[in-house]
Image 1: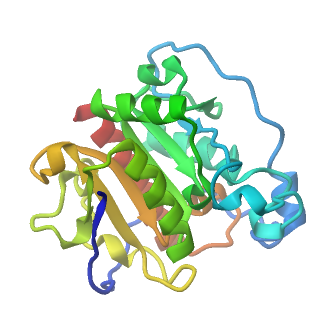
Image 2: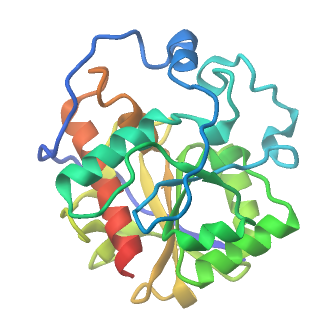
Image 3: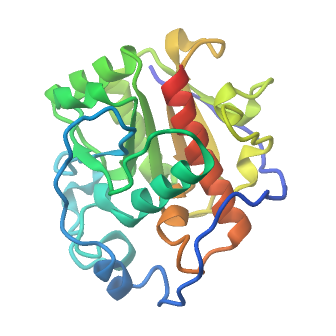
Length: 276
């Protein structure tokens, strides 16, 4: 079974400025109108060309906890798009610019490729991102595809979910993929896993944000062979939403120090995925 090793309370901490976009003074970030305007139809994928390309996973909700929810026009969760597309494509476009500005990674800045876990093309990319896994559901082909991707060296970020309902659905899906996997609360490990210092040093991971959906941010992950000394295969940003920080970093709605911290997490995840 997937076992959860939960941590303690969040620690307070400051942020070191990385890079931010100029404020644009637009409407409230959570408004339906603003999000609908910022979320155009899915763009075409680019062929693999060796550059780091952000990969967003298109997920299904038909068999999970989201199967009975109408997502069209539900404000924060709707904005005319399914959960997997939240913050698309502004989050990855903004993040790619930061990755280029702060590292030597040859990055595609035009957006992201949208793939499914059972797409063979996924194995060309070291990192994949899943939004709102609280509503995620897989068929058998996707289950096998994700298992193969993780065991062959892929790294997956699960982001933008919180609360026990979301966790229960996420855990149930991961039980299908890695039945013997153990979720470790990464902040509780001593020393901290190298994902937190693969580029920027993040000494207090849980200090990123105030409570989200009733709980403090936690970073939970499964290691290869359930051994914290080995490769981290996935990270769950539970009770957190890095994508929101990235999406609205050019709008001036969110604190600069927290936005900078969110970018540091993303850069670290990329560097870790490319070097482990």
